[in-house]
Length: 400
Image 1: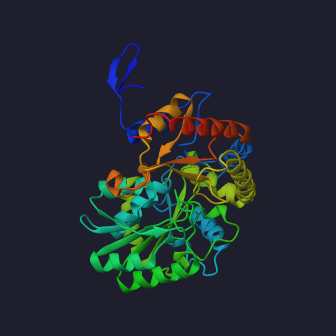
Image 2: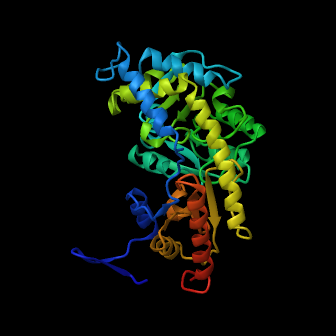
Image 3: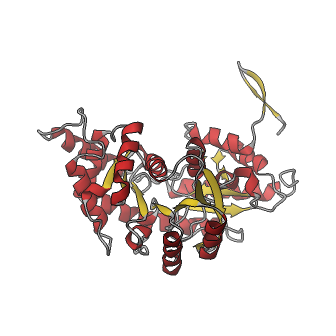
């Protein structure tokens, strides 16, 4: 594998770095033989039929208004449906459906939360390894990112406190349940400590609960502990499907006007058809059934992962859809990402999840998403290929 790559009809090009290559692979539509571990989602076969039925029911409603404008935060019915549903698992209920804004996916909700709570030049605290789009969002909004230390249990409260003393932190972004990519779930004691530190230092918390659905009994959320200081994000992209593009953003009363302005400035409103379909899937009980089935499927796939990669270091959890595979410090991520791609296995380098990018100085590694392969047998074969490539590379130039 050299420094250049040739493409028929186009010419010869210098190979891109690992991050760019991985991003290129993740946005291409892979062929049938390619197994894509880079996309973090799990869609079950039965969801197609449920989706079609929900669309038909929405469109058959005599009062269907999916081709019309709706209120910026969403229709009254859709917000009430989301409000009742979100309150089912809460000890402290959301005070009103007016707290909910229906967004066009989790990334859109994150942008609204940042736009509502921060101004250019202000500081956002994130974990050293985190959802990569938060870095891009902060860059686009001209916000400074600082790293808070974390360990095997998640954010370290003492590190957050020191960070607040050193910087004028405006917001903390956190994925407290099955964190991406580390799979940690923040213990209750730490959540309480972090909330107290945020109150003391006047820091808003942006809570991304994308993966909480994987836990049978998730710990109490930041939004319940500090509802006046937390903007809570609950997307359906992982629990249902990424193509639905529906996410619920729950905002404190003092921030609702700012969120509404951000909604109007960005998309005006969520797509009415998708919001109505989401409400139908939730109200019919089909959402709950699919989530239950996904938990079982993830548990089975985790067992396969641990068996196939037995003896290799993996960072994950029994209820997690994603896996970190640490590599030696002298390993070349770019070489491995390309070698695996040529073996029809797509993965993401761990550096994509570094809050400061390559400047974070994090150890090498790969991130895998075990929900993406279409079935368990396909996943197992791809994991075997991955193990073979990684082990074979130890005696080649993948190690510096």
